[in-house]
Image 1 (cartoon, rainbow, N blue to C red):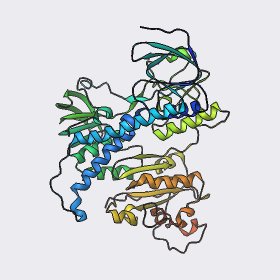
Image 2 (image 1 turned 135 degrees about the horizontal axis):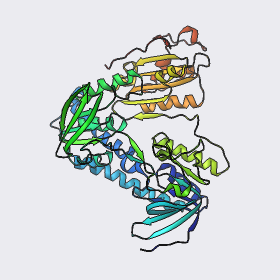
Image 3 (image 1 turned 120 degrees about the vertical axis):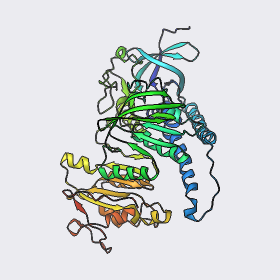
Image 4 (image 1 turned 135 degrees about the vertical axis):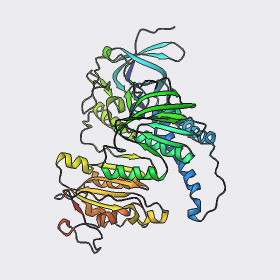
Length: 493
């Protein structure tokens, strides 16, 4: 093996090519700085290869399958539906391949060097890269950015490792429809895959240790999602602990589950584990660089994403940032600001998110649970999606939208929606929040008819007289609930 001891000098050495890392690489390399990126496997990171983008690709295929099964409701006859998971996978792979090619072109155009291999620190701001051909390179940067990401966590449940369960990575490569998929975990990944596989034709069971789905969200969100999944025939096994697993995923698996003090057995053909993430830090030898980690293994950073080592930064999930691609992109903005004389920080930034079930769940800012815990006063606007005219034209009226507004400043504190296009509608509210617009601006905006965003007109028409700051010729259609009243549980229609 060829070992190269004298460090090659770079302006910037980056570990990982996820969104925060690659944006930094392309930006600084295009400015003429010498930049090298070391990537173990997935060019462009998890998002375009094994996470966000391919999963949404497969989810859309499942939505088409659902449309076909319900086509008679739209006056369109159909014959028998046949799902070819091989072609579903092929479509996904085609998109991923095009994305990788686009990433390679961006590296070429920017001048950033891409090295395929694994890396670990050997000193301050110095890493050793082990290349795919077995050779090594020693690279030292004036600055170093760590964007090593996370991976699926596997709990220490007896029999789990031996069952060789699917994670989201393997689930995206299935070329067959599981007869009965058991999903451990009722978070984002688990819920999205559960619904998609059910729509492809699998029997699906979700096992979660909490007593309701998305347990950190308001109860009306959990109720809406539980109703949705129940309508689609997905079994929810809640308040449950998996004690032991037998068998092998892809053949037959059996789970011994403790639920409400009693044991039961749940059997299926495939097992998907979606019960959290762990950081990829254990093999980096961070101690040799003076980089400290938290008790859970995430890299310690301050609000400027500085680590405990001079000249070393961390971005994305490995730094403990919220696990969303758009937040990793914002981490890039923070680090870029620090490296170019600015002072952008992570504190106070908005963290919007969307669960891509059908319909979607999306939120920005405070929900009622958080507001009440913090003692924040608010006015609550809430209405069912059935009152959004565009939703009526689509025959997709399940869910609701609601907003929390400050009684005095009239600024929007938070927005939650479960419904068709919830993520897109949320983005309109987020922009209003960024601009610190009062809620009346959305009420009185001439939003295009009929669009889903137009529903914000109807939502904010419900202003009580004492909250009015602008006169409106449109009569109030619903009343607003003050903070000390319980939220109305709006059922799915």
